[in-house]
Image (cartoon, rainbow, N blue to C red; front, side, top):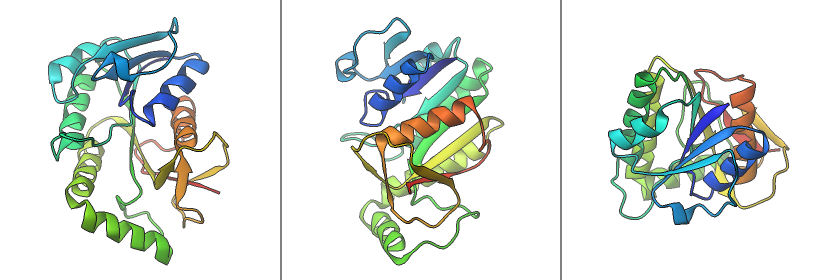
Length: 211
């Protein structure tokens, strides 16, 4: 499958790109600077520089793709509505090129109606996030709401604290009460690719967490 990955040079983007290549996908890694993607050259890897805030950059990169994977996150000097702006540009480019499938990563603090009541520690973490990073949390909520209203086959994966741990494949997904409110970036990448290849959560907001 031909997939474009936004946020490819980030800490979750690296394992996502690597695992996608290992699974035989043709990957377009969309990055701000090619030097930030530290992955050996692969025949099925194309690296494109651009800005997710510039529609023309995204539209050009999206041509010929079968699906979109987004693991964008806020970094220094980004606008407060980076995720919402990028979602609008990505969705518009998908419609321009008749791409229907998108899997996007956001935080577990973005609540949905299907959620079950979490434990005290998870609720405390979510409350702290809203207080300490209110603008970033609101941007994540707005991004989720924007994608949810689009006529696309979207899946919004919601992850708790991300770690640099190894790939375990020992995780749970869906709507559940966290036993361990953390997950490795490797496992998040694995789940996103599993969902790409064998869709189970189209137009849903699954949580992911370690078992």
